[in-house]
Image (tube, rainbow, N blue to C red; front, side, top):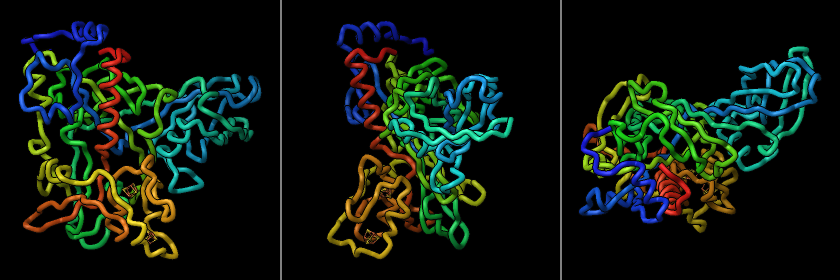
Length: 408
Ligand code: SF4
Ligand code: SF4
């Protein structure tokens, strides 16, 4: 913690209790021309993006006690889980861990991300289990029937991510794109919410630390510490109850290498001194975005988050009158979140703002930006982060703090 402390967290909590706390979202604070530590108590930051290090831990009953010794294999809507570590011997129930990146054995487009969204929406989930005795158990389960349903992110909310180009001829299938990255240097994909990102606003982790509170997909969460691979790219390990999550903030995202998962996180930054305040004033133009070659992850250039986020549209517009009513709608097939149907248009509850549709059909319009690389202008064709969801959850956190529903 920084020594030139002007305020303490308990003082801010007292203000929350009295209802006179000054809270601003990260987007709001960047637009303020003059601001001092006295004017602001908390800044709510946020991020939304593909987070492969997402898992869920469940415990639920699948049979009567004594019906089997323990479970050997288990599938939820076809998505494999890992039974254990507790064997639950003869209890008729199972502990299991499911990865957000696991694929269904029945549908290669359905994976953990889609499954978790379905669970949070309260849909019935098909369970198939095999016991050590060789018995097959089939049942249905709902989140209300689950005794435990917790999300554990082992690598979440990267401080800064990367942009990707393909230096080679042809199309490279990758998790960093939906339809594959065309090369050499034909299109760019990127991830990261830039100036909204929590760790970008507290880069030295003065206030975001072990035990700090956050919102994960709308559910109150605890930061367990640094996530895996943090020595290369700082990120967080976070845990929260799935029962309290809102399904809008989480979901599956189909990529060129199979289904992935996205999450939304908001973290409050208490403004205790000038140093912390100066950190939250950082803008996209000062945040580097390295460009990597998707073939070997070698850095081949550098831009900033201003190049990809400033002056672009957050969501596409569908011009129905321009639709050619193709025999098979390409957009319906490639939309990574299943948000598009030519008759109904875009379902904005599902749309991620990835921009892929706008680059494959003239009936869809969206300004997504162009970046300069080796004097060439390269279109941004895939965004794997969503600033709209990040802003929405940051605003939700601000309201909860102002209403005395969230303490630091
Ligand atoms: S939305 Fe585009 S791809 Fe789909 S049917 Fe219309 S014109 Fe064809
Ligand atoms: S921007 Fe287009 S392709 Fe991307 S999620 Fe939205 S509708 Fe689907």
